[in-house]
Image 1 (cartoon, helix red, strand yellow):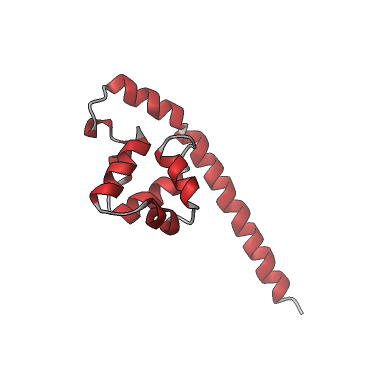
Image 2 (cartoon, helix red, strand yellow):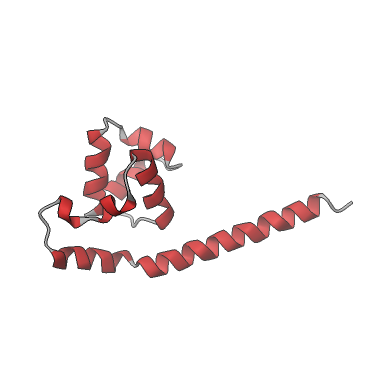
Amino acid sequence: MIGDRLKKFRKDLGFSQERMADQMYLSQSQYSRLENRSDGFTINQLIRAAKILKIEVSQLLNASMTSTNNNQFENEWANFNLKDNLLKELEDIKAREKEILRLLFTQHSY
């Protein structure tokens, strides 16, 4: 599971959940739920966690690190819904960009 791999990398570096949560802009309880697989990961969270841990995102997704088989990895990947998450992240980014532009033009319109 992604959460298990995240936890392993975090512990290998001696990072606390609090440190990871702070650097990922989450509360400690939100971060804990990610590790314990209570919550799903967003693409941005995976990328941010990988950067903090100085690893590739693929290392968090790579099932060969554990003794899982390919079917379990494929099931985990399917549950991850990468396509849906990417589309949602893209929509969120576009909405934030529009809001920033609106604010910029509103502030400079005298």
